[in-house]
Length: 209
Figure 1 (tube, rainbow, N blue to C red):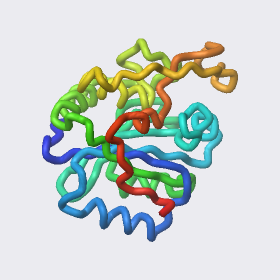
Figure 2 (spheres, helix red, strand yellow):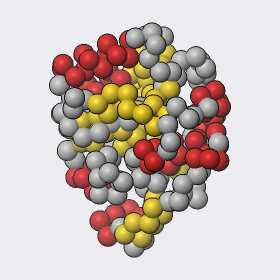
Figure 3 (cartoon, rainbow, N blue to C red):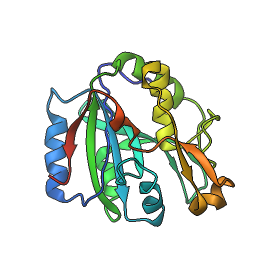
């Protein structure tokens, strides 16, 4: 699938409740013709898994990150996400409206960010390349695999291919709560809110305001 260069955004999601008013405010902001082409999103929900993942984040607030792509009058969210029903795990893309609707029962809050220091064209090129590959969700949380990725690893590796300046030292975490998945006592991990460490990362929208 080809992603138009002039139509991309990345968004971040935080941790509170997304009310109808908040969604309307977001829709109006995204509908602005001057809205950023590229944004990041992170979110958190009320699930037990989300609670565990938040404890591994830098801020203690986030459990998932994805990429928002602007296409015509809507935004698509690109993410590596496990499918607990089918067992198939891959890169998915849905509109932001569909995403918020599907997360309505469990979503706590979300926030959206822009990374101004990013070479947008190069990032889009790398995004196209990796998103056309057969990627599965990385339950082992292993940074050495490129065909098995978790959500923040997916975006981090695209950023690294865009510019080595985005290289970060992975966080070492103890994993007794994830031992059944990782089979390891500790691991190197890219926190879901790693992007907040970069210069030029600016808040675009916060559903709690």
